[in-house]
Length: 319
Image (cartoon, rainbow, N blue to C red):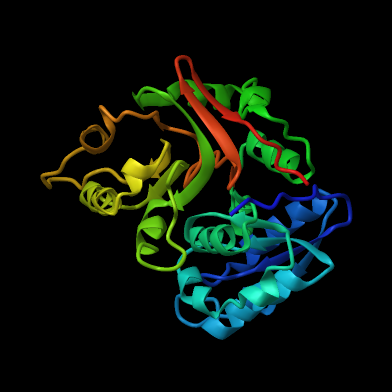
């Protein structure tokens, strides 16, 4: 499916904030909303942000209806997830594609929101932003993260090296220089993926991530090495790693072995799955459950070059 591009936001545009996964923290949400408003945007909160059912932000029907109402609202230009957690996958089969397909707008979020990125990408063909959820703005966010996110939304990101305009930031330069090549090569394709656990959980569903000829992005948090191993093994056996044109690994936060337990290291696992691949594999891109968590456009075409290392946006995001 050819990806549908997005119109840049402008001052006074309306942003819908929904909670498709777990319940929100009101104070953290409020701080995130204030930041969006300082960008000159209006915020419309949907009922799910105030709902709670155990580890879910209300009933599945409520969360699904909030997403659909926000997506089809002609006044709303972007739908932004309040937080991740768990639950977005439970609403996928409740989303009415006929209601959603006529509309093209921004979708923002990460982690559990990977399920919605997969849905929107596969069924609606819209480029989406793997980006911080609204609540994460409550933390001490590096300025470069805010700058790149605003530039993406307001149409100021051009084709070319994705991080080149931002590497004057000392922290980002350090992170960029710490990216490593696990396998050399050159490849171009649409960027797909997101959270490793969610990408794997979607296998066998109508929304599983199609990696054929694409650049697969993966990140995760709080998974022991044996679980990372198991998830990657499942993707490998499903043909997803071999089918990808290239692989871009983000941050794997709090994924170290437990104390006094025999374990492979993450380095062992990367070597087992990626060394010797006949395609570019790069690790350490600063996106995921980390700071900064740089926004990246899923569905857009990028190129990975490893000699020298470059990650380039090769098509415009904007209609």
